[in-house]
Length: 80
Image (cartoon, rainbow, N blue to C red):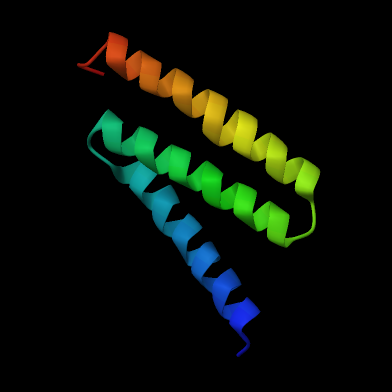
């Protein structure tokens, strides 16, 4: 097993773990945190696959903008 394969394996397992946290969490704050982390790991994986344009779009839109909007909603409606 090479170091690159080990890194890819850790990133893939991290994405599965964050997906489970996002889907199964009881609180909205944990779900939003898992969503932002999932988008960040997805951007890193897209960069590792050699698609920097997709990685930048995922980081900017998926993790950044959508995550900020979800955090803003939590700030406006804390009972969500």
